[in-house]
Every structure is written in structure tokens, then in C-alpha cells.
Length: 83
Image (tube, rainbow, N blue to C red):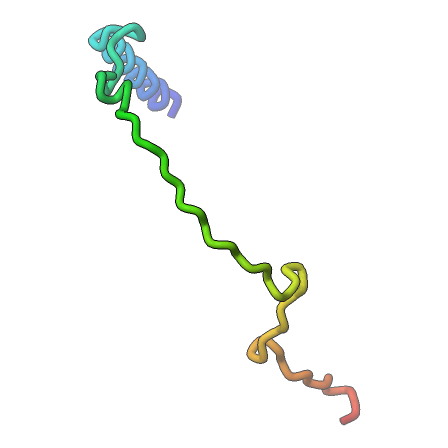
């Protein structure tokens, strides 16, 4: 198991070393290359439409909503309790 892990770590290291060597190292060109079009995008005028006024909620946001009927269960008395 240790040999397996060591071989995989060595393989990753070798692939990384080849990529750094062939790619010019950390001083190489960026991928994708920075071009004039991506470095300075055209200026677009900002237009903001005014949002319509919103009304305040009529109920409190912190008040719990009523429990739906399908979530309520019928109370079943225990067998030892008198009915």
C-alpha cells in the first residue's frame, strides 16, 4: 500500500515538473492569455430603473404560521386509560 501511494505521489510530482518546465515556469504566460479585449472591457453606461415601492407585510414575520390540518394527529388514549 505504501509503495502504491508513493508511486502515485511521484507520478503527480513528475507531471507537475514537466508542466512547469514546458510551460515556462511560474513566469510563463497566463492561461488563457490576457488580451486587450479582456484586460479593458468597453465601458457600458449604467442605467438603473427605479423599483416600485413595496408594501409592508400585514402579518408579523416572526409569528408562527398556523399548523395545517394534515399535520395534526388525533389523540389516541393509552390502552390502560379509561375511555
